[in-house]
Image (tube, rainbow, N blue to C red; front, side):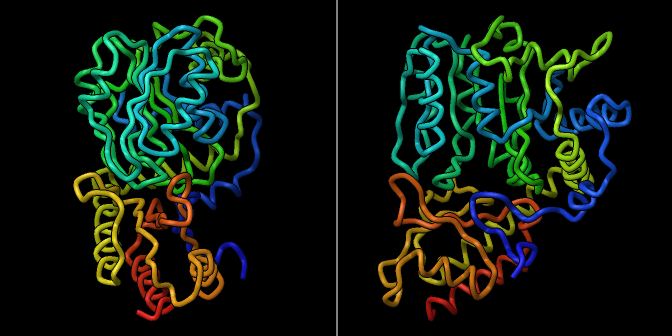
Amino acid sequence: MVLSDRVLMGPGPSNLYPEVISAFTRPLLGHLDPEFLEVLDETCDRLRTVFGTENSLTLPLSGTGSAGMEAAFVNTVGPGDVVVVGVNGLFGERMCDVAQRLGADVVRVDAPWGEPLDPGAVVGAHRAPTVIALVHAETSTGVRNDVEEVARGKGDALLLVDAVTSLGGIVFDADRWGVDLAYSGTQKCLGVPPGLSPFTVSDRARARLKDRPPSWYFDLGLIARYVEGEGGRTYHHTAPVSMVFALHAGLGVLLEEGLENAWARHGACGHALQTGLEKLGFELVAPAQYRLPQLTTVWVPDDLGGNSEADVRAALLGRYGIEIGAGVGVMAGRAWRIGCMGHTARMRNVELLLGALGEVLGR
């Protein structure tokens, strides 16, 4: 079996839109070629639409979503800065790690894995933080956190949001909500391979960026001179040309479908998947009001017919070419993470998984 035969329904890469695959066949251009720069500019415009922003500094960073996380922190946080971080999963934990490495005074606001953060607790954790950070769609648990409510109470703090698993799959409205920095990944609901981090910075946050952040590669001040090109573009690093072509194509598919239609498609597939899993006897992890449609977490049942949870996932992959994800952190061995994102968010994939899972488990 070749990779193209697999149905990717884990928390990692989703299947690619056909238009994205075609984009990789375009002739390779130099990263300063006028034709490529035109595509880059269009890609930034499309990202503004998808993020729901008019931020001038909106771009695809060269690196995965984790690169976006690091760029967001190194440009806004330094020794002694107070950073409030909402933690209810693995990716909130990673935010704490990055901020601590920068010498920040990290104030954690914890919620149990599988439960949403309390917005009041997040905004009330410190009287004057430099940054408030949280994950919109926690990939490790399938829980949506209420970014809009946190934004209402952020005060003078910059609001930094991980939108890796949410962008393109559920509503994200940076300007209306008041998000100051947000980063995402291409491989989830955008249906593009991993390798770029869609990124946006508000004018308010831009005025507070560190003059000389500890990372040269992620120095947004330097990168902006290349991306925005006012009076000529200043070379910073070699842009991943083919990946930008792919993102340009993926965003084009998304915008042609329409954001609201894409959100509705993800919602319908998620609802069908979650309803079907409950009919098979599975218990869902996330509470209904905060359950992501694009990433469903279920508790691994006690009775697997003598098989381990890894055996079941291996059977799905080996017999049917369907990949689902294992649990991580405190949920390792106890939960499965099932993605329904981007091009993978199709009813036929939902029906295939439910049928295959029922067959493997004899239900």
